[in-house]
Image (cartoon, rainbow, N blue to C red; front, side, top):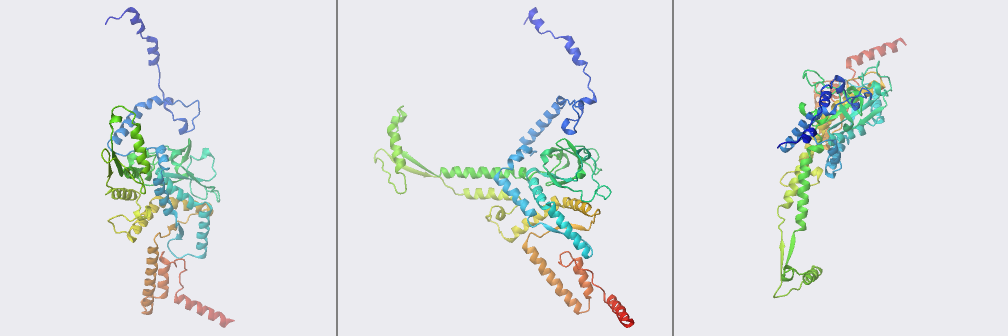
Length: 482
């Protein structure tokens, strides 16, 4: 195809425009942090978002390929917020959160027996737990772990925003008495991880953010109490915002299958019975309006009742009732319900109030359920409670007693009755050993003090017979002198 001179002029590219583009110089300032990542001033902020387009395209292609292969990926906080409104998912998450914080627990001291000062200190710390509503905060943390995979609890000491990037040191020199204002719940979709070590696995900060940006405000990680569940492999942590796999995303597949199965069974029930009315269709099939047929069907519908009578033409009409078998539908629905309960790690009797077919249910199911809740308490709340108790102690007394720890109450009543039976058996054994002269009452008392489950571990150590005789001699001498 031969182009005219006019066409060639229209396709001419101006060389000055090309030369001007080649003169563009990219400096380090072109790739500075966004405003939301560090409160950078408007004059300095020169982010070139287009340079990240190839990387974003590659990541999107990778995530799409993972989804096509059946490999799960992080669905995003928008989707998780929508799942939090699903009645079934919400019921499972909230039930687990109530189980984890329902009976709660108490403060105990490990090691030797407690003095009156030690008991008073534990009681004061118990009041601190109530004053700062720690139980309610941890219940919400358990729920957020279920919905979003984790959350942060901010230790509010009244510091200004510009000082929050500095570490929070728990010492009386840096933490003033009664300076704690409270604990603030920070939802995970409002935070962004800052710097983290992704090079050296031998360091303690490997894939662990040292700073979190809360709506653009940098806050050091020591000022947070971190909650997370369903810990993920190292390479997946950044994709999940350095939290765990949300329970809502984990059970989504099972809940979707159950919902589809339930809806299919409902549609099948609607079509359970189909009445076939055989009559003359020539008028309709030949292009007519079929008014007479409509009148006939309406009359049949009005008279169709358990107390009604159907009348049809003996020669030209017939009536057939077709029913669909519902055998096995109930079993399929129950199996999908059991699968949902399994993904929640809840017994069917607890979640649905039903007994699964083909299984021997009873005390074993509840015991397994309570064992799972206790393991979740240790996994999700363990480190968080330890750090929180240290903060409360340094705020109240200016020092930290590491022998004080939080002990959850037993969830199973059978465990409590078993503990009482064991203590009774041990008491009877001690009585026999004391009567036989094998051990002394002092040794039996000391064993009660050292046993945290004896209910008598707050007793003081028993004074030995030798010390008692010495005290009696001294008192006798004082009486003689007088």
